Amino acid sequence: MPIRKHKPFPNHFLWGGAIAANQTEGAFNQDGKGLSVDDVIPYIKPDQHGKMKMSNPDLKTIKEAKAGTSGNVYPKRWGIDFYHHYEEDIQLFAEMGFKALRISIAWSRIFPMGDELSPNEKGLLFYDRLFDALLAQGIEPVVTLSHYEIPLGLAEKYNGWADRRVIDCFVRYAKTVFKRYNTKVKYWITFNEINGILMGPFIAGGIITDRLKEDQLIQTIYQAAHHQFVAGALTVKACHTLCPDAKIGCMIAGVSVYPRSCKPEDVLAAMNEERRTLFFTDVQVRGYYPAYVRRFFTEHNMQIETQREDATILKEGRADFVAFSYYMSSVAEANKGELPVGRLFSEVKNPYLKSSDWGWSIDPQGLRYLLNILYDRYQKPLFIVENGLGAADKIEPDGSICDDYRIDYLRAHIEQMKEAIEDGVNLIGYTTWGPIDLISATTSEMSKRYGFIYVDQDNEGHGTLERKRKKSFYWYRNVIASNGEQLD
Ligand code: BG6
Picture (tube, rainbow, N blue to C red):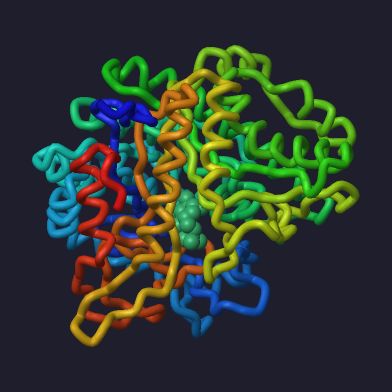
């Protein structure tokens, strides 16, 4: 008998895909839904450098978007019309053998302005139907409570998470959905990429940045993050009470950070850059602020307002598992100065890695590295809830789409997941990003496609919305059927 080099993936490994309400559902103003921050984000035409930048619109831009006077298009308002196509799409996911689908609930579908006291029943009904359709196919819903879609009302009225009162709004929303879906959902995630607030304070935090003086911005972002930590911890506690069979995790945008050289200063720069992200999991998993961040606050003359009960809340509301997205790694170099708001990590090019057409470095081994870093640090189950390659697909004259580049990307990452499992990491699932093409988070374009399933729609929203299976569709079906053994 040949000796197996890698342990197989555990039984019940959660293979599947991940989507988000704001990038797929559309129906932005139907059945009582209110606007979310993403409904005022326009499609950004790619420029020379800005492929990675996120919109942080000012008040004037938001007003124009609402009035429809800007001349821009807002693709997240129509998504891929998943709201009306979900049954067909779930059928396709089931055909690939999905064990799990990560979705998010659009908070503004349940509480249209965000601060109402009672929910919108039609919004709740939509997710009832969605979960029922998934469960009927044996697909486990993995549900993010807030995926870059805070109600615009909260941004306008409170400046989003900058205001402590938003904690109550979020906890009310979370309790509403816990009570409603406690027999249907076993995996919850509080905030998508909570560290994304450093990059997109508007999308991730509902903060309208031109209301603040420049020197207030960074302090406001960390203040908002504190409110999210408290809200997240209260939500974890509520989930444990209202959904005793469920697990609830936190989530970050995961990035592995390498020093530019073995110069000690570069190594320390990498450590500090890595901590910008790990700070967010440290608080949510360990239940307290790490000492290094206190030094950061002091040195930046920042005072974060807290209340006496916060320390206990954080301690009692620790996440059950650590979820993360992984797309790329980063290189840190000393003496480059602080990373500005708008950047999650340095953009020093790694000469050893290739990049996607959108300039994102491709680094499968970085995934193994990060899995080990996170597991060594927390000893909690890990869940990769996003990973994938955004690419411009081409339809061949015979109608086929041969996305071998996507297959190569995913295969290489799955191989490294196996290595990490052999290293001893407890990995419970893998949901690739955008199993069906959807609207890009950073650029709001359609042409950056991640899917196994092609959607006929362009950046301006023209197209038939027809769904087509790509080559990767059949490949991923085999991966799942063989529990990760058959990767060719
Ligand atoms: C993650 C987000 O940052 O990356 C997703 O959670 C997003 O919402 C994904 O879509 C890929 O980014 P983009 O900009 O290529 O859509």
